[in-house]
Image (cartoon, rainbow, N blue to C red; front, side, top):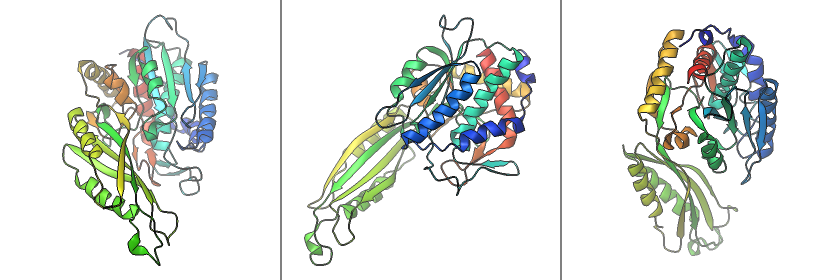
Length: 378
């Protein structure tokens, strides 16, 4: 590749103030207003860089999205590069006191700093540095920032697929793999909503008359997670039930997730989940299929894109592996469409979705240079 992208004057310390504004603008998926505030912050930063900003209204109760298109001599005349990331996080509003922006050595903490505001920020910084240096990108560049990835992208999948179809390459700055590698495929994922409905009674005076929905759901949770094999995993991450401690619970709801490396194995997992039945007389069980992410298996075009990225990384001074990964992303959709997609281009760190979430400051510059190099030649 040409040298200019590798010589750009990236500075980790200079990146931090802007990233801090993003991280301290809390944006949990289920708070559409908070996500909207975050989108406004990002849209302004991108507009100041000369992008044409379009805000796509949210739906299904989720927040809006932002599309930022950068000027290019061939914009609209040929497919471009889509940089795609989400700005929603799993951390509820009010997490900052427990997970404040702070730096401890090479670790930088904050809600969403690793998954995936840090990755989005280095992508923006890569575009900024290319602009400042007058380095042209091979293709027009568009940034799409979405609002509901953490719950499977139920309201944005159509937007993602429509936008990706207009592009030749998709780059996803989700967190890097633990060894710094990138993602060239992702497992298939299906979500399920379960509801047990029992028979209420007074828990003190008439306990035996009731049929507890909570008890039945507890049985189901154990049975569901026991179905996990090497081919497919089954887990229950949410459970809600009951209203009064002195009443036998009428309803209990749960949310379950299954993941598989192969689509056929996920299809079998879906059948097994939909076939679940109540084990308790007087209690019914309903299972509904929720959001599904298709399996993304790498093809020759994806691996060629990876080899390009690997060459860039080696020029910078490090190497990157490639792997298929669990933990879905919006790259599942674009990869499954057959559009060359490279995922896991974001920051290194650990603790995603926990109060130990952090990125490694030392990863900011090399990962930003990698993104800049890809934008230059992809």
